[in-house]
Length: 195
Figure 1 (cartoon, one colour):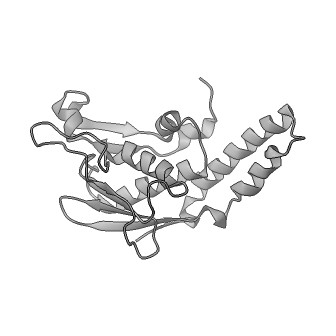
Figure 2 (cartoon, helix red, strand yellow):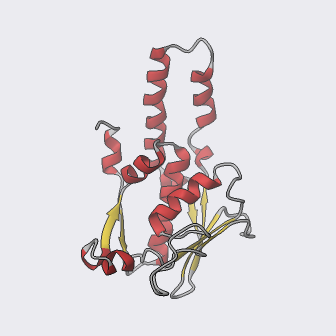
């Protein structure tokens, strides 16, 4: 399997999942999720996917400054509806990382490990697209992602959607598209706000 080498340089997210521990999946329930894992789940790599990964990773660092984030015990609230713009794509990434779902996720075992009700939509968030929270402490953070400060994916996409675009043009587009995603990871501190 070949993919852009920069995927392997992206900082992974370490989680502790009580359900995974209970079911004997990972020792102490500890495991890592990589950007590549989410690319496989989504079937693509783009600025939206990168932003969702970064917003979640960096928010978890703030929520858990001295501990491993506990998957299944993290809430995620979105300002927009699930079917608005790219909110559904972002929610899918957030769910894969945190375990949070609205009404469609894992219902739990004997009252434990329930993942439903941890994700909500159309929540007033004072201008931020996502709010992450810890169920145990109630601590919450807002995450904003502004890729337009450094990249313009729409302009790049238009170049290959023209009828005269050749196979060579499309191959070059793919290379430039992933260079753009790499730039987002390289300069994420310029386009991400966690408060």
